[in-house]
Structures are given as C-alpha cells and as structure tokens.
Image (cartoon, rainbow, N blue to C red):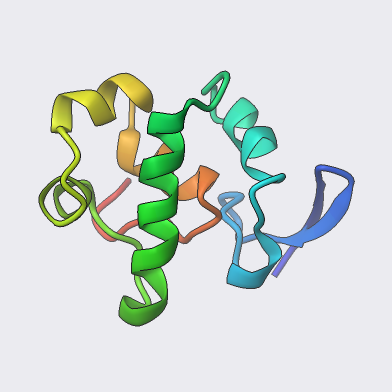
Length: 105
C-alpha cells in the first residue's frame, strides 16, 4: 500500500487515495480530506453524517452505501447530495477515512 502525507503525517492509502487504516483517521484529518474532495467548511450536518459512517463501519467491515446512510442513518437523500455534491457516497467515505463503498465507480 502506498503511503502519502496528509495533514503533515504519513497516512496509508490505496491507489485511489482512500485511507486503508481505520485507526489513522481522526477529526483533525477530516477538514484536510474535505478540502481535497472539494467540500469546504464542514458543518454540524457534515459531521453527523461522518460520525454515522465511522460508527457504522467497525461492525460491518464495509462502508455504508448512500442508501444505508439515508435509511439507517436517517439522513435525507437530497441533503446528502447538497452536503457532498457530485458523488456523495464516495466523498463521504473519503472524508470519513473509510474504503470506497461497494458499487461506487
């Protein structure tokens, strides 16, 4: 696995830039990753989604899909697209330091 420097520290990533080590992420890294993903100024609403993703991942060992975030997490689908424009599932996972969800291209 490649290693890159993000936020001034060495981080293990895959060939697409997604973090490969769950434990290397923390909330200080999220704004840096958000900037790389084109998401400016993480709001409380962003953080609710990111924290849901981080809490959901360990038991399932896979990143929640957009549908799961909406149905299980209770987030409005249109709001997810507003918060993470373009490819919300991919951007949410990237900023949360998780693998790309299954089905994302």
